Image 1 (cartoon, rainbow over the protein chains, first blue to last red):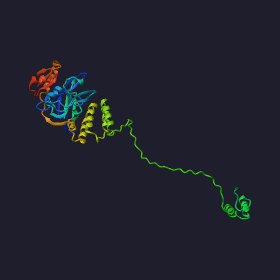
Image 2: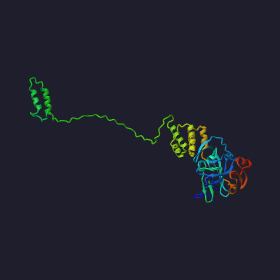
Image 3: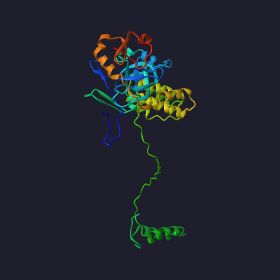
Image 4: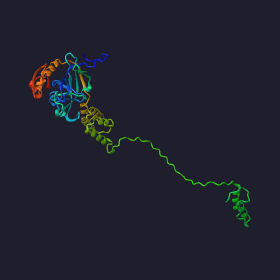
Length: 153
Length: 225
């Protein structure tokens, strides 16, 4: 059952169950399946929901496979308390819905691809993160931890 | 001379008049008469001697001036306060203080700022962790320098995320892939794995190697175990 407002209008048109992966700080991450990039180079992978950080952040490997060139200038970007050098580009993102849970949703967001992913001290599981600024702050979403379900616009 | 009443012979003034007017030539007559007539005719009153001081008053009208609370030294250079503002923004960025950065940024008057400074401030915003501000700075930059190719590029890069499509078909393989990962991820820890509809297609130490191994990646989940 998808989420609706009291007056019946839809809050979320899609939903997907998520796995959790023990993170490097013994905290579970909410990990959903997404597609990155545009046809014909679109790639399905996993992404962790991370409202504490900015951008969609992914490894160079997945970014290149998804069709990003990563040939532009490098920016010094503060992620958390760490200054990290990397590329900023726009990337297509599809939030995939489970078969019985509404519709998939497609958006172009800001992607930050660090020169060295290990500088973020997050590990590469999963290989991408959905951050707040420039990504999650652009659509409605909700989490039901009792049903391990991620709802989205 | 003692002050006495009028017409009194006892007064010195009257006696002086009397003496002077009896003189042979009478040359004192007018003067004496004048003197005594003044004394006789007037109610002479003693007056208090006063010292008069003339004070020149100068009135100065000054409109009250609102003082600022900025006690930092003001640097007046070419470009007005822009160099000082840039220095403050740089300081906030170097400290990773996004709140201070945004606070300073909100006071900036962008008129007469060269395009190079917009670029500089945009990069400082990323360094400060004020990521949303990059969008604002790029927008303002293009507004003031519509012909700047560099600022146009940044404005495009930091344009708001754009919804492409809703109501797209769901992905039927998600549940099977989740189940495989829950049961088998630990067996391939550290490797890239390719899974289609709950079935492992391949593993490799790099994604490039895995993709070349798998071939078509349509409907294939590629992730690190």
